[in-house]
Amino acid sequence: MDQIPSAIVGAVIALAVSAGERILNRIFSKKEKREASRDADVEMLERVTFEVRDLAKDYWQASGRLEKDESSILGRLQFLSLTIDVLFKDQMASLRTMHVAMNRFDRACTDGNFQSVDRLAEPHRCSVLELAAYSLVHMIKTERRKLS
Amino acid sequence: MTSTINIAKDYTPYPGGRYPNDGDGNGTTFRQLFLEPVLESGGHARIILDGAEGYPSSFLEEAFGGLVRVKGYSPERVLRAFEFVAVQPGFARFVSLIEDFIRNAKPAPRMV
Image 1 (cartoon, rainbow over the protein chains, first blue to last red):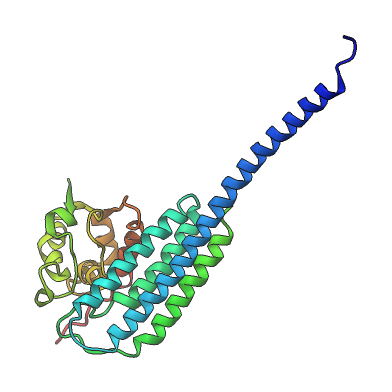
Image 2 (image 1 turned 60 degrees about the horizontal axis):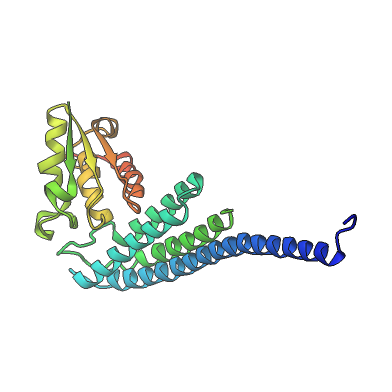
Protein backbone atom coordinates (compact mmCIF):
# COMPACT_ATOMS: atom_id res chain seq x y z
CA MET A 1 0.00 0.00 0.00
CA ASP A 2 2.86 2.39 -0.73
CA GLN A 3 0.88 3.95 -3.46
CA ILE A 4 -2.69 5.14 -3.25
CA PRO A 5 -4.47 4.17 -6.41
CA SER A 6 -4.71 7.15 -8.71
CA ALA A 7 -8.44 6.57 -9.12
CA ILE A 8 -8.98 7.24 -5.39
CA VAL A 9 -6.81 10.35 -5.50
CA GLY A 10 -8.74 11.55 -8.50
CA ALA A 11 -12.06 10.92 -6.79
CA VAL A 12 -10.97 12.83 -3.68
CA ILE A 13 -9.82 15.79 -5.76
CA ALA A 14 -13.01 15.73 -7.78
CA LEU A 15 -15.09 15.74 -4.58
CA ALA A 16 -13.07 18.62 -3.13
CA VAL A 17 -13.40 20.66 -6.34
CA SER A 18 -17.12 19.94 -6.51
CA ALA A 19 -17.64 20.98 -2.86
CA GLY A 20 -15.59 24.13 -3.44
CA GLU A 21 -17.67 25.00 -6.49
CA ARG A 22 -20.87 24.50 -4.56
CA ILE A 23 -19.67 26.79 -1.76
CA LEU A 24 -18.54 29.46 -4.23
CA ASN A 25 -21.81 29.20 -6.16
CA ARG A 26 -23.75 29.62 -2.96
CA ILE A 27 -21.73 32.72 -2.01
CA PHE A 28 -22.08 34.30 -5.46
CA SER A 29 -25.71 33.29 -5.74
CA LYS A 30 -26.47 35.01 -2.40
CA LYS A 31 -24.69 38.19 -3.53
CA GLU A 32 -26.43 38.10 -6.93
CA LYS A 33 -29.80 37.68 -5.24
CA ARG A 34 -29.11 40.64 -2.95
CA GLU A 35 -28.04 42.80 -5.91
CA ALA A 36 -31.09 41.75 -7.93
CA SER A 37 -33.33 42.57 -4.97
CA ARG A 38 -31.76 46.04 -4.66
CA ASP A 39 -32.15 46.66 -8.39
CA ALA A 40 -35.81 45.67 -8.14
CA ASP A 41 -36.28 48.11 -5.22
CA VAL A 42 -34.67 50.91 -7.24
CA GLU A 43 -36.95 50.20 -10.21
CA MET A 44 -39.98 50.26 -7.96
CA LEU A 45 -38.84 53.50 -6.26
CA GLU A 46 -38.46 55.14 -9.67
CA ARG A 47 -41.89 53.98 -10.81
CA VAL A 48 -43.64 55.11 -7.61
CA THR A 49 -41.82 58.47 -7.60
CA PHE A 50 -43.19 59.26 -11.04
CA GLU A 51 -46.65 58.03 -10.03
CA VAL A 52 -46.59 60.48 -7.11
CA ARG A 53 -45.34 63.25 -9.39
CA ASP A 54 -48.22 62.66 -11.83
CA LEU A 55 -50.81 62.54 -9.05
CA ALA A 56 -49.40 65.71 -7.45
CA LYS A 57 -49.33 67.56 -10.79
CA ASP A 58 -53.01 66.76 -11.34
CA TYR A 59 -53.77 67.74 -7.75
CA TRP A 60 -52.08 71.15 -7.95
CA GLN A 61 -53.77 71.96 -11.24
CA ALA A 62 -57.19 71.68 -9.56
CA SER A 63 -58.76 73.51 -6.59
CA GLY A 64 -60.31 72.39 -3.28
CA ARG A 65 -60.14 69.12 -1.38
CA LEU A 66 -59.48 65.99 -3.43
CA GLU A 67 -59.35 63.43 -0.65
CA LYS A 68 -58.78 60.40 -2.86
CA ASP A 69 -55.80 62.04 -4.56
CA GLU A 70 -54.45 63.30 -1.21
CA SER A 71 -54.55 59.78 0.23
CA SER A 72 -52.90 58.31 -2.86
CA ILE A 73 -50.08 60.87 -2.69
CA LEU A 74 -49.52 60.47 1.06
CA GLY A 75 -49.63 56.65 0.96
CA ARG A 76 -47.12 56.48 -1.86
CA LEU A 77 -44.82 59.04 -0.23
CA GLN A 78 -44.81 56.94 2.94
CA PHE A 79 -44.04 53.83 0.87
CA LEU A 80 -41.08 55.64 -0.75
CA SER A 81 -39.78 56.69 2.70
CA LEU A 82 -40.07 53.18 4.08
CA THR A 83 -38.38 51.51 1.10
CA ILE A 84 -35.56 54.07 1.07
CA ASP A 85 -34.92 53.55 4.79
CA VAL A 86 -34.75 49.77 4.31
CA LEU A 87 -32.60 49.93 1.15
CA PHE A 88 -29.99 52.28 2.63
CA LYS A 89 -30.21 51.23 6.28
CA ASP A 90 -26.54 50.20 6.49
CA GLN A 91 -25.17 53.35 4.82
CA MET A 92 -25.72 56.37 7.07
CA ALA A 93 -24.23 58.90 4.63
CA SER A 94 -26.45 57.63 1.80
CA LEU A 95 -29.47 57.60 4.07
CA ARG A 96 -28.94 61.25 5.07
CA THR A 97 -28.58 62.24 1.41
CA MET A 98 -31.75 60.34 0.57
CA HIS A 99 -33.68 62.03 3.40
CA VAL A 100 -32.77 65.46 2.01
CA ALA A 101 -33.94 64.48 -1.50
CA MET A 102 -37.07 62.77 -0.16
CA ASN A 103 -37.99 65.80 1.99
CA ARG A 104 -37.56 68.11 -1.01
CA PHE A 105 -39.92 65.91 -3.03
CA ASP A 106 -42.39 65.70 -0.14
CA ARG A 107 -42.47 69.49 0.17
CA ALA A 108 -43.03 69.87 -3.56
CA CYS A 109 -46.03 67.53 -3.26
CA THR A 110 -47.63 68.33 0.10
CA ASP A 111 -46.52 71.75 1.37
CA GLY A 112 -48.49 74.97 0.91
CA ASN A 113 -52.24 74.51 1.15
CA PHE A 114 -52.24 70.75 0.65
CA GLN A 115 -55.48 69.33 2.19
CA SER A 116 -56.95 72.80 2.73
CA VAL A 117 -60.62 73.26 1.88
CA ASP A 118 -60.05 76.75 0.43
CA ARG A 119 -57.13 75.65 -1.71
CA LEU A 120 -56.74 77.25 -5.12
CA ALA A 121 -54.96 75.62 -8.06
CA GLU A 122 -51.21 76.32 -8.13
CA PRO A 123 -50.03 75.08 -11.55
CA HIS A 124 -46.67 76.83 -11.11
CA ARG A 125 -45.80 74.04 -8.66
CA CYS A 126 -45.48 71.58 -11.56
CA SER A 127 -41.95 72.65 -12.52
CA VAL A 128 -40.77 72.25 -8.90
CA LEU A 129 -42.43 68.82 -8.81
CA GLU A 130 -40.62 67.71 -11.96
CA LEU A 131 -37.28 68.91 -10.65
CA ALA A 132 -37.77 67.28 -7.22
CA ALA A 133 -38.94 63.97 -8.75
CA TYR A 134 -36.06 63.68 -11.21
CA SER A 135 -33.56 64.74 -8.52
CA LEU A 136 -34.90 62.06 -6.17
CA VAL A 137 -34.63 59.33 -8.81
CA HIS A 138 -31.14 60.48 -9.78
CA MET A 139 -30.10 60.43 -6.12
CA ILE A 140 -31.57 56.94 -5.57
CA LYS A 141 -29.54 55.57 -8.51
CA THR A 142 -26.36 57.39 -7.46
CA GLU A 143 -26.55 56.14 -3.87
CA ARG A 144 -27.57 52.62 -4.95
CA ARG A 145 -24.29 52.32 -6.94
CA LYS A 146 -22.41 52.96 -3.70
CA LEU A 147 -24.01 49.97 -1.95
CA SER A 148 -21.50 47.10 -1.68
CA MET B 1 -39.33 68.43 33.35
CA THR B 2 -39.75 66.60 30.07
CA SER B 3 -43.23 65.59 29.00
CA THR B 4 -44.05 63.20 26.18
CA ILE B 5 -46.44 63.92 23.32
CA ASN B 6 -47.33 60.93 21.17
CA ILE B 7 -49.00 62.44 18.12
CA ALA B 8 -50.72 59.24 16.96
CA LYS B 9 -52.05 58.37 20.42
CA ASP B 10 -52.64 61.79 21.99
CA TYR B 11 -53.88 63.70 18.93
CA THR B 12 -54.61 61.64 15.81
CA PRO B 13 -53.12 58.79 13.77
CA TYR B 14 -54.18 60.75 10.64
CA PRO B 15 -52.58 64.20 10.86
CA GLY B 16 -53.40 66.45 7.92
CA GLY B 17 -54.35 69.96 6.87
CA ARG B 18 -53.29 73.34 8.23
CA TYR B 19 -56.36 75.06 9.59
CA PRO B 20 -59.23 74.01 11.86
CA ASN B 21 -61.70 74.00 8.97
CA ASP B 22 -59.45 71.51 7.13
CA GLY B 23 -60.45 68.74 9.55
CA ASP B 24 -59.83 67.16 12.94
CA GLY B 25 -56.14 66.36 12.49
CA ASN B 26 -55.04 69.85 11.42
CA GLY B 27 -51.72 71.48 12.31
CA THR B 28 -53.09 74.66 13.91
CA THR B 29 -55.12 72.79 16.53
CA PHE B 30 -52.22 70.46 17.28
CA ARG B 31 -49.93 73.44 17.79
CA GLN B 32 -52.40 75.23 20.04
CA LEU B 33 -53.31 72.20 22.15
CA PHE B 34 -49.92 70.54 22.53
CA LEU B 35 -46.96 72.68 21.48
CA GLU B 36 -47.76 76.21 22.62
CA PRO B 37 -48.41 75.17 26.26
CA VAL B 38 -44.92 73.64 26.43
CA LEU B 39 -43.31 76.90 25.33
CA GLU B 40 -45.58 79.06 27.51
CA SER B 41 -44.62 77.05 30.60
CA GLY B 42 -40.92 77.05 29.72
CA GLY B 43 -40.99 73.28 29.62
CA HIS B 44 -39.50 70.61 27.40
CA ALA B 45 -41.26 67.86 25.47
CA ARG B 46 -40.37 64.70 23.63
CA ILE B 47 -42.50 64.36 20.50
CA ILE B 48 -43.10 60.78 19.32
CA LEU B 49 -43.69 60.74 15.58
CA ASP B 50 -44.04 56.95 15.17
CA GLY B 51 -47.42 55.34 14.76
CA ALA B 52 -49.15 57.89 12.54
CA GLU B 53 -50.08 57.15 8.93
CA GLY B 54 -47.59 59.77 7.78
CA TYR B 55 -47.18 63.55 7.90
CA PRO B 56 -47.98 65.93 5.06
CA SER B 57 -45.57 68.87 4.91
CA SER B 58 -48.46 71.35 5.27
CA PHE B 59 -49.35 69.87 8.68
CA LEU B 60 -45.74 69.89 9.92
CA GLU B 61 -45.06 73.42 8.70
CA GLU B 62 -48.21 74.78 10.32
CA ALA B 63 -47.66 72.95 13.61
CA PHE B 64 -43.92 73.52 14.10
CA GLY B 65 -43.01 76.32 11.67
CA GLY B 66 -46.11 78.11 12.97
CA LEU B 67 -44.50 78.46 16.40
CA VAL B 68 -42.00 80.86 14.77
CA ARG B 69 -44.13 82.28 11.95
CA VAL B 70 -47.38 82.80 13.86
CA LYS B 71 -46.42 82.85 17.53
CA GLY B 72 -43.09 84.64 17.16
CA TYR B 73 -40.86 82.26 19.13
CA SER B 74 -37.26 82.12 17.97
CA PRO B 75 -36.18 78.98 16.09
CA GLU B 76 -33.50 78.35 18.74
CA ARG B 77 -36.06 78.46 21.55
CA VAL B 78 -38.37 76.05 19.71
CA LEU B 79 -35.56 73.64 18.89
CA ARG B 80 -34.45 73.67 22.55
CA ALA B 81 -37.97 72.99 23.80
CA PHE B 82 -38.64 69.90 21.71
CA GLU B 83 -36.86 66.69 20.86
CA PHE B 84 -38.20 64.32 18.24
CA VAL B 85 -38.36 60.53 18.30
CA ALA B 86 -38.85 58.59 15.05
CA VAL B 87 -37.72 54.97 15.18
CA GLN B 88 -40.20 53.41 12.77
CA PRO B 89 -38.74 52.83 9.25
CA GLY B 90 -39.81 55.66 6.96
CA PHE B 91 -40.21 58.18 9.78
CA ALA B 92 -36.65 59.33 10.52
CA ARG B 93 -36.69 61.89 7.71
CA PHE B 94 -39.57 63.76 9.37
CA VAL B 95 -37.19 64.92 12.12
CA SER B 96 -34.99 66.84 9.68
CA LEU B 97 -38.07 68.08 7.81
CA ILE B 98 -39.54 69.53 11.03
CA GLU B 99 -36.21 71.09 12.03
CA ASP B 100 -35.96 72.70 8.58
CA PHE B 101 -39.47 74.14 8.94
CA ILE B 102 -38.56 75.60 12.33
CA ARG B 103 -35.21 77.04 11.17
CA ASN B 104 -36.59 78.51 7.94
CA ALA B 105 -39.84 79.99 9.29
CA LYS B 106 -40.01 83.78 9.32
CA PRO B 107 -42.15 85.63 11.87
CA ALA B 108 -45.09 87.29 10.13
CA PRO B 109 -44.75 91.11 10.08
CA ARG B 110 -46.95 92.73 12.72
CA MET B 111 -49.67 95.16 11.56
CA VAL B 112 -49.15 98.66 13.02
